[in-house]
Length: 112
Image 1 (tube, rainbow, N blue to C red):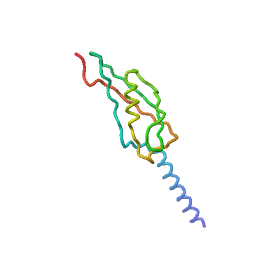
Image 2 (cartoon, helix red, strand yellow):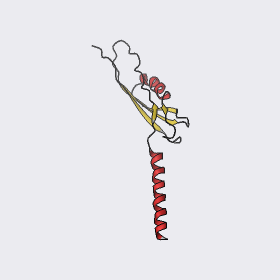
Image 3 (cartoon, rainbow, N blue to C red):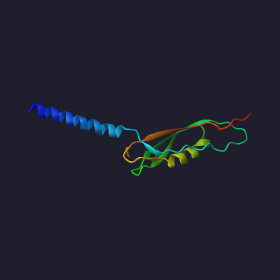
Image 4 (cartoon, rainbow, N blue to C red):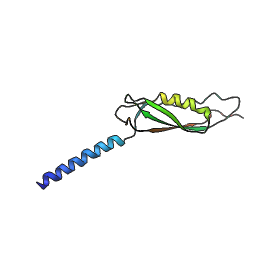
């Protein structure tokens, strides 16, 4: 009888660990889009960071996108558009969790 109980306990622990691992796994992006650096005015070398929060719908698309932090408002629109274009693999995320994404902007060219 004790062997049966030990075996059942091991089985339950294994099932629990698989369940927890599945739900704690990071969301897997199947399409990740980088934001475009906004067209610079003549000789303005801005860099910046935009941090967004969002939820993922059951279809795998970001929703409820909000700005958490932005070093410059200049990069916000491009960041939100890029986040809206992301797609996540169904089953690799939780729909009731809040996720975060940070976009870093560096100028592609420098002014001399």
